[in-house]
Length: 206
DNA sequence: TAGTCCCG
DNA sequence: ACAA
Image 1 (cartoon, chains in turn cyan, purple, orange):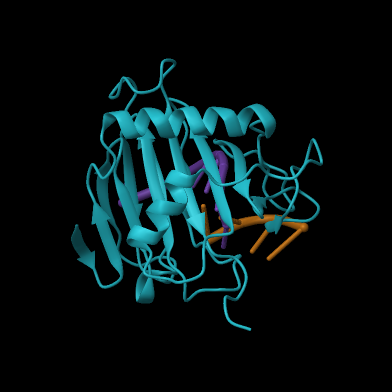
Image 2 (cartoon, chains in turn cyan, blue, orange; image 1 turned 135 degrees about the vertical axis):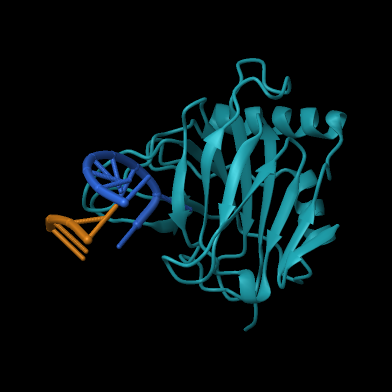
């Protein structure tokens, strides 16, 4: 583990290849029940570049009318999200430093040309809990800034199996994905990148 | 403002 | 910077 800044822990290659393959298998099982959908932005209705699903008691969703939110069911099927795979609950125990378990695991799939603009993860009630992020598949250029728009940013290449934790004073830092490096990994047969984001949504105490 | 466009 |  290396500390990139106060509250940012970076675990390069935390998951070895067999563990990555097992995670992909687990996510495939999730997506069979909770199919990937294209999220759209509030008000404008503009589609995001990623395709998305969730597992856990709550999932992050967005649409034109109701905006960003967490809800217990898939927006298209109405079914409950599948449970978070045990390996990811174990990861949280290993790196989060937070007693209560994660409630949401957002699954973002990036195609070759997908990007994600700088944003804050701020739709949770519990900012004391960190955000834990897992990269699988193709490399990406990840960018992280400060807690306000327009500040200086830093870029780094994230690789398959990497884990990054944003907590403490870095919990609300802006971050995004500027580009995918197509065919940089052989993990996913059809290419692309999967990002898994574990979050605590509700307040852990009382 | 989790996107897109345009400029230096 | 945008425009809801």
